[in-house]
Length: 348
Ligand code: BGC
Image 1 (cartoon, rainbow, N blue to C red):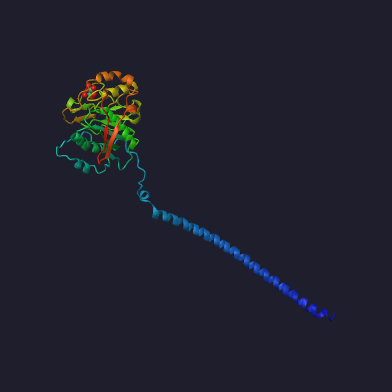
Image 2: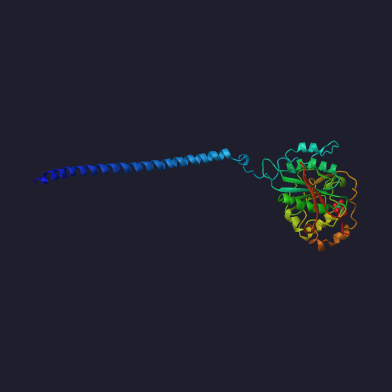
């Protein structure tokens, strides 16, 4: 017993120490656990905040770093009206001898490399105007002077291609037009083509330079022939065909050298395909022909009647699919694309 007394005293007191230690540990654990929770809640709300901030920063960053294209992208345009409000009807044509190419460029500031489209609406058709040409600078100038504003009043997306025959071998209008078609399609998928003589100027802008679901002949009347259709099947001067209509007839024949016959040949191709030529009303489809003497190098083709006789047999292999040529240059001038081409010479 003498030994037990002091030991038991110590043990009894130690019980309180153990109790005290356990309580303190419990308190410490509670404090630690609740601290973690608060921290994790704080962390997750902070994460959300920083994500939100990051999002708005990304937006701001995007707006600061937007490319000029993004900023300049205009809203999508509505299609132009069926009838352009800019049409004037019959206009008085002028052929001033003092007119210069620079004047025409200044008057047509909206034209770039021969191409133009409406500013306020989306054009209903994209049209390539093909003009075969050699040594007719004055005629070309008058035509450009009238044609650019005329096409703009019609609210078209268009481009003018002038196809120049290089050298002094006999002229071949039809082959140059085949070349124009093939070259213009390298620039853009034009849906409509206007095959245009350089010396014919349209008098009335209701004569629309768009394609129909049938090939269209636009020259019903010319001043020099009393504004009368030359003959029932006449298909010369200015014609409009879609990309596919022209492909379907295999384009023009390449074999008409000199003046005449190639337009009659195209009519035969159109007829073989059971297409029907349409024309605008006679009071609208009127042209002024700029006076000229017959050019040297474009003499009447005396062989044309014989060639016309064989069109039904040869059209499949004589045309776009056999048009061989060498492009010498493609100059992108302000008012037109100038394609200079070597188209070879007549086969003997
Ligand atoms: C020719 C055509 C020409 C027409 C009108 C015809 O004899 O074959 O090529 O367009 O006359 O001048």
